[in-house]
Length: 593
Ligand code: ARG
Image 1: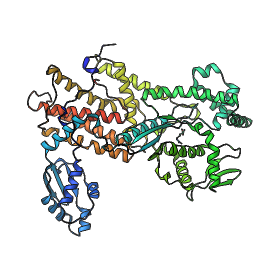
Image 2 (image 1 turned 60 degrees about the vertical axis):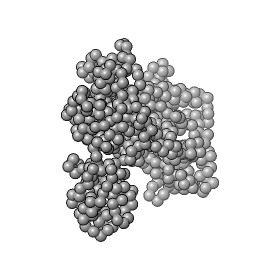
Image 3 (image 1 turned 135 degrees about the vertical axis):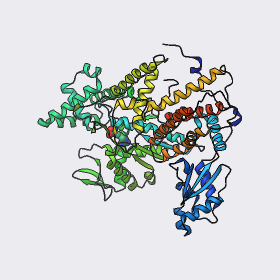
């Protein structure tokens, strides 16, 4: 293992002196523009907020930095949009805005590149990783129920999606001023464990189970179902075992605990690889002693109905009733989720509670929310199901049924191995190849998922994930590392001494695309959270990387002339924002790659 260079161990050095540290976030350009339009209007026709929401980013450079379409105003003012655009353009004034032009029904504005650019760079360099964070903190707690795999079963691709999306949403919540409470609602209770115990007692082997817990348990489960097709007596045995578990029979409990512990150990490995932690593991079993209270409350509120011996609650005209208790008295998934919601409200008094669970469970959550509403809880409106699409392999759903499974741990390991191979080819001298390969491999898996809109399906392809060229995690990481190298070179050139940047005085034309994107980061952070779409950040990072790489191709950054400082400021700002964006997605940034 090679020794690290001294500068690698040092924390990121600030590029700017404290002179600017107390600076407030300069106003968002869209806001500046909206305010300017508002001020230029003779009478109030639209609210500022509405104006703000209408502002567009023009596709072509010649149409300026931002554009405002006048159609809505035209409706309110009963005037031609082109005419309004002309009047607005003539009256618009703000020190940030260099020029306003009416083009047809649009007002296009051009910002002062030197002023606006310099202010953004200065802000990023002084705020560092805090750039884009909500200035308002303490907005309340957000409970995020995510990952939540089922014990005795492999960690599925669906759980992978829930895990990476959930963690990213937690990071985004924090960045937006909330406190995230991350909960793993482990699937650790239910009739399936009765079946598993029955199967284990019949065919199980302790040593095998200890050596290969998940696959052994899965095999037992599959065999149980196969044999039960010809031997229905088995099903009764399974039910009996579950009954024993519910009535706290010692043997049943010990078996259950064993299956659970082994499963958790296996999940732990995946969490470690992905760098995921939880504030609480409160699985379904956590609510065992709260079941009767829930059933009673439903009864007291006259919501419980008999249906073929089972107890149900009518959830609404447009959906089937919600099953609360089976004929044999056992409770269900939904009952436990009712208890969980009540518990969480009491324990965390959340501003909102999200369930990051695949789209297949949409009905379950609709029912859950409807029942809570019927119970009279107004906060039922603060519960959100955050669904997502499937992971496909060659266009087909990856399934865990019939034992046809892919072990996630293996998939991640494969990504790490491939990343290592790539690095060895490209950069065999790199120190800490093992560590970097892990950051790149894992980052690739996460980014590949998060760059897709949540509801879309994701095609699983390890080779695609790992290219350094496409819209991938490694591409973004590589861009940041490359910029990092530039800064290091600059520091070495100056003998590692005060490479501090006193002021960013100039901004070159070529950097403008990069600067415009840097300016958008804080609003992208808001947009990603409001739409619960980590993909907003992933896509943004790709755009910023592309813009920076093309800037890098156009100018010589270490030019040795008066421009060098401000070009380094651009590079430094890009590093900060790329790293922070990757962090929001729970991806690490290697210093070198
Ligand atoms: N264990 C469930 C499954 O794998 C997901 C649980 C999601 N969370 C919840 N509160 N229902 O399908």
